[in-house]
Image (cartoon, protein in one colour):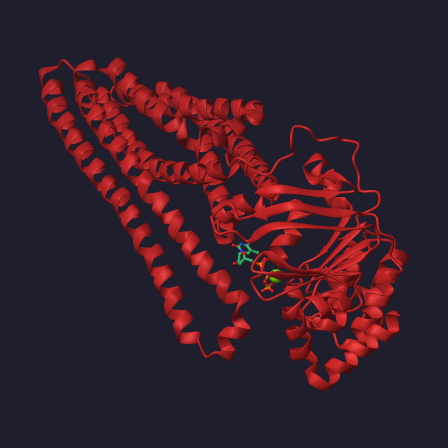
Length: 585
Ligand code: TTP
Ligand code: MG
């Protein structure tokens, strides 16, 4: 948590200036009652107009100074707090970017969003408030007491006794509210989660008529947030009247005691007025301190939450024997006795896989749903690391590649097409930082999306709506293929990325892919796609069920034959069998 606050160090000069300005304001504030006392005792009570005029002018001058200092202080405080917030947001964002999937699984997306927005804002507000008043408040308190002691120590003893008790009470409030606000922020995560899921699943919710259900879910999350916030605020709100009540009793006592002293002649009226004046100021400072405590307890909770993200240890890092000169040259891929389970579970997902693919070859991966196809893909660009065995690219363990260079040579088309807000050009060009428009168009042509794009109202400048909603499933798939192709990868990995394409388009796409000198991994459900590949890997429950060409598998794998039959029917099956066998001989 303290680390989060330590980023303020970068702004120490501006903070120094802001605090100096606060002290100027404070100085004026503390001098004013003293001058008032002077005006009353030496001016009003002695009917000396020149004294009143002189000290009146001094007071006016000081007020001007305080005014200017206040404005300048606001300026510096805003500068520091805004830059500090910007800085933290950037750090959290960069940290999240470096997260492995294991790290990601620890923080729900909604919680990361709240941490990066609301929690940072809480910190910003507190920093701003601190620079404006936080230092002023305790100093005003200390200054108020000191000045009172100077003016008349007997009267001021009341304050000396009362204040420690009140401060102790406030400390208790700070501690209790701190943990309560931690709860509040967690509930805010909850609200954001429901909100996010709702917005993302809007179409589904409408289609399934689940509006009322979702409404209740949202209201529940929202009311939990409200209740937690109310009970936390209530604590702070109750503390203010308690403070004021105690202080007012103290002031009454000062007045009573002071009037007795005045009649006895041992205290001047102005002195009583000054001390009462200081006491009122102290009361108002205590109110401010309560608010500061509220802000501080919130900031403490937020700083903890941000600290958790920043302190997360990245578990997927460059290995110590990384060879920084390694890059993917040819694109040969080999799996050697690879076993894998996700770090958060013990269930084996891939079991003892061994196979190899030469540069430029195409490997089709088939297998029932949940058999581990996507998981297998993730091991090549090191989105996860193997549990046992080795994945080799161009004969070198992927662990030996600098992660950046490894991933640069790989084009991944995920199972679920993800697009970003922006134009078609931007979305395709996202795959390669310096892609020229020729490269983008040629990737689009190969991905069989060029013609569709040409028909769009603004062609390549057409904006893809939120999460690609103005595109069909197949169009989105082809755009994400184009995005991978534009990288001219050495290894291209298509995760069921042609599922939404008709056979004719798919055929054209596969033909275009052959012109790329890259090794292609293609997860597919379709035998028609697999038939074209150099090798087929049939996965069953994470293990190799069969390996070979289409013809080989027809002869060796009953499961493969079953899949072929289920997709083609008996008659077509004979045809497919015959066609492939004659065409290859
Ligand atoms: P996948 O590798 O996702 O299976 P698949 O790609 O073959 O399935 P589909 O055809 O439906 O796309 O999953 C294999 C197992 O691993 C499955 O039990 C779910 C589990 N799994 C995780 O635990 N975490 C993950 O991030 C993924 C992707 C899968
Ligand atoms: Mg999958």
